[in-house]
Image (cartoon, rainbow, N blue to C red):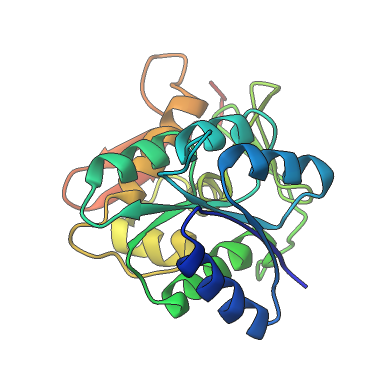
Length: 232
């Protein structure tokens, strides 16, 4: 049973989400604010966290920051409709996805399933085989990433994006292709989440020794991971 932690001070929405996800076989815990959510996580780690941005005592952003200081559990942010700043900030801070209020619980369920599927799915080839390229080592057995021997903390979405690109080094992957493979959904016109995840990933894995980025942008098309067999 998937353990879901919902942090939201909207009683009506929280009851609706809990009732819906209980019916889908999820084990749902509810926190009224970010501080309570962190306390609950210290006792039992959930499989996924849903964070509302606007909460009393400790808002969604500060809660996300503290979560990311401790672990890489998948996090979906709930934002006000049309508030692009909240969405961008959440993704920059390490959220895996966002959903604007109001929303259909089925849409939230679809987002959750996509994230959990990405974090657990096996590949057609050997799912435990390491991938090492351009100074980056991706250990698929335990889903960890090392840059020049140093552990790099990635979110579920960042890890899956990196894995997709490492499996096709030197090849251009379109934004639509990456969105479908790594985020589990088709890219829409105003969805900037893919670009934000790539931006965060670039910051974490840095540049090659010659100063070139490991992930290059192919303007108007997509992205490419630089295949440098000599490392960084």
